[in-house]
Image (cartoon, rainbow, N blue to C red):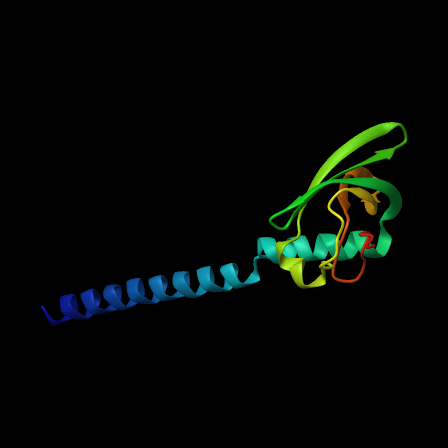
Length: 125
């Protein structure tokens, strides 16, 4: 009778330890994941550092979103960039429509930016 109680306590402690290890493992996994905002910041940094420059046209700027188009090897791309995280860097006297510069990935020309933390293709008057 006493051995059965010890076996039950041991099983309960083993189950508790397994749950605790699962929770700790899940928290480490969550902490190691790259958040979307960080992934976007890294994309902008990579394009600012190694992207190829293209002349572009700013089509619209509204509520922290840029819509622009540019041409690469005869193909026209229209892109959208959410710049709400970069709003302190955006000039207050930005002309909403007009020429800008864009940087794009030569392996994937649809991947482009007009502004990042270290580079700006916006033109001000």
